[in-house]
Length: 196
Length: 182
Image 1 (cartoon, rainbow over the protein chains, first blue to last red):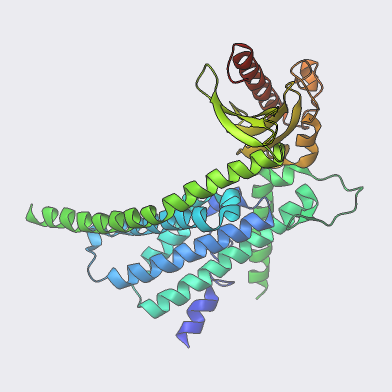
Image 2: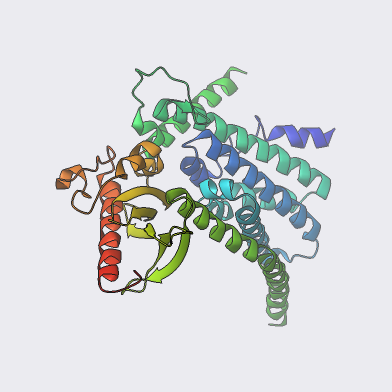
C-alpha cells in the first residue's frame, strides 16, 4: 500500500518541479524541445533510481557528518557512468543531451531525495520514491517543453503542427520563455490545489 | 581527533570505490566512443565527396586536412577539412568539402552549442546548403557584403562559420600551392 503511495506522490501531490520547486536549473535549460525534455527526464530518473538504491543501502554505514559528500560522490559517479555509456551506445541522444548530463549532478531533486527520503527509508520504498519523482519530473518537463516548443518553434517532437502562417514566438524558447511558462504553470497548479 | 581521522578514512574509501568503478567503465566505453567518433568523421567525409580515396595531409599551422582522389585514376577530386572558430557561446566545428578549384561542395556542422532557436539553427539544411558553390571571394555574410544569408538573430554565429571556412580554405590553398601534396 505504502509502495503505491510513495510511487504516486511524485506525480501530483509532491511534484518535484511545481510543488517542491527543485531542479530549476535543468528545468529551465532543457525544456526548449520535447525530445530534450524526455531525454533529460529519463536520464535524471535513472540516476535518481540508482542513487536512491545505493544511498538507502549504505545509510547505516554512512556517518551523518559526512553524508552530503558521500551522496555527492555516489550521484556524480552515476552521472559519469550515464554520460560514458550514453556516449558509447546512444550517440544520437548523447549529442542532443551532452550538455545537460553534467547538469544532473547539480539537480537538487536527486540530492534532495537522497537526503529527505532514501537516507531514512528502506530500499523498496526508495525505489518507489525514485520512480515516482522521476516520472513527475519527466512529465512536468514535457508539459513545459510542449508549450515552449509549440509557441516558439511551431513544432512538437520536431513535427510541424502549426499552420504555415504562424510566425514562431522566438521568446518562448529563449530563457525568458522558460520563466514565463513555469510561472503560469505553477500558478495553475496552485489554483487547482486551492480549489480542492 | 581520532574521530575526524575515522571520518576522512570512510570518505576516502567511498571515493576510492567510486573511482575504481568509474575507471573500469571508462576502459570499457572509451574505445567504443573513439571508434564511433572516427566512424562518424569518415561518414561525413564520404557524404561530402563520395567515392573517393582520402589521404591525410597537414597545413603549415599543423591542422590536418584530407585530400580526396579518384581511386582509379588518382585524379584529385577535392579536399575536406574541419573549420573551427568561437561563435556566440561555443566553438562551432564545421566539416567542409571543397573541389579541386576550392569551390565549396558542401558543409556539415559537426559540433556546436549555440543559443537554441537562434544560433543553433545553423545545423539546419536550409542554412548549410547555401554554402555549396561558394568560393573565398564571396564567402562573407551578407552584412559584410558577401553571399551568405546570415541566420536571423544569429549574425555572429553565421559570421564565425563563414569566416572559419574561408580561413581554412585559404590555409589549405596556400599549403597546396606551396608544394604540398599535389
